[in-house]
Amino acid sequence: MAVSRRKFMTTTASGAGALAVLPAMAACGAAQSTSESTVGPVKFGDPVTVTFWHTQTAANATALDEMVSRFNSSNGKNITLKSEYQGNYTQVFQKIMAAIQAGSPPDTAVAYESMVAEYMKANASVNLDDYALKGPLALTKDDLADIFPQYLDANKYDAFNGKLLSYPFTKSLAVNYYNEDVMRGAGMSKFSGVSMDEFKKAVATLTKKDGGRTTLYGTHITNDASYIDALIYANGGELLNKEKTKVRFNEDPAVQVFDMWGQFAKDGMGYTANGFEWQSDFGAAKVAQAQQSSTGYTFVRDEVNKASKNKWGIGLIPQKDTAKPATVMFGGNITVLKSPKGQELRQAGAWEWIKFFTNKENTATFAVKSSYMPLRKSAADNAEIKQMWQANPQAKQAFDLTQYARPEPNITAWQDIRTVLQDALVAVTTGKMTAKQALDQAAQQANKLIDEKR
Image 1 (tube, rainbow, N blue to C red):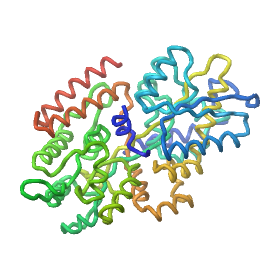
Image 2 (cartoon, helix red, strand yellow; image 1 turned 180 degrees about the vertical axis):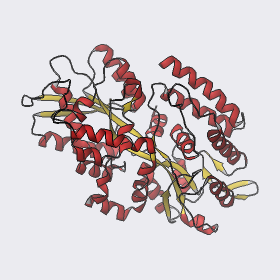
Image 3 (cartoon, helix red, strand yellow; image 1 turned 90 degrees about the vertical axis):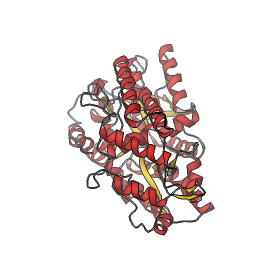
Image 4 (tube, one colour; image 1 turned 30 degrees about the vertical axis):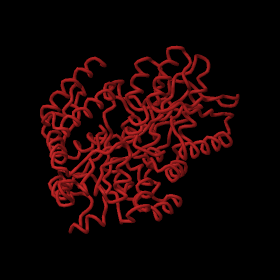
């Protein structure tokens, strides 16, 4: 099922700085013929089996299996990829850490950034610079220019000298789902790119009550760190200092966002649903807006068609400065684990699979079948994508927001910090703490985690 990378993890246990990375990486691609790779020459021919651990289920698993079958029949290098489902991301992480200790990890696996950092601390991750940017298997300059730079940037780890330790695989954006018919009925005509003040007024206007009970909520409040991060970015804030040694989410931009959510909850204008109940509530016009993952659009579509049949869309989350919009991109990456000495061809085979899955044609095909975002700009010219967008215009609306997306922090401690942030929001929306109190306490806990994980 195509869901938020952070919500998947919790329910089953998903700017300018980013854009600046492209010229440097493109330069590496251009110099690939003369760059030296530390892995030595790669010579395919003898049979090589590559084990791939993943988390996909249902229709996504079917689409992935089709891709694996095509790779095995067409790679021309005698590579056989064994694709193995290993549970959710937490379970994959636990199994890989155990496999690393036992000296038998898979060749490649899906992972979040914080997990890759743990693998690297165990000296188990392969530096993909040696495959993606150097030597005979490297990406071309055109490939590098085609991939959205922030997707690559999220996989370069400052804690490990900026090495490319993983590669984008299944990506999503934090977006705002809006019920256009409900909003027009309330006299509104602007649905995307609204300011924070406009958003607050809209939520108050849209909320309907009957006898003190809310019958239509102005917005859903998503208690998930990815959307907390997104709203902090959108309100002009930062999550970490430049050195990535301390958090900054207890500063005014974050406090303002938490204050807003706390007030919405107190006044009955916003609520937090259990799991994915917000989708059916949105479809039945019980909630007018929701800040959620772009991958959920097919489920929202089905719920709207089943209930209200209202016109709806996907737009930017509210912004402090609508001229400089920001949101968050997230999703699973894929990393390569070190092969036993003398079997390094498995690493090269794993990289060949990654290249195949993320090439110009296949990233578009998988996006159509899974509702994840295509990784490349050229997807806009792909016939399959265009046909899908015609039938599902909201998918095109989401894709057009990619340019505004920023990665979340990839420091080792961030996975634990996510829980700290979510607990802080609960404390605010339940009235137990003020926004400033909750975020100051969260910052103390987070900074301690950073120090411990360093």
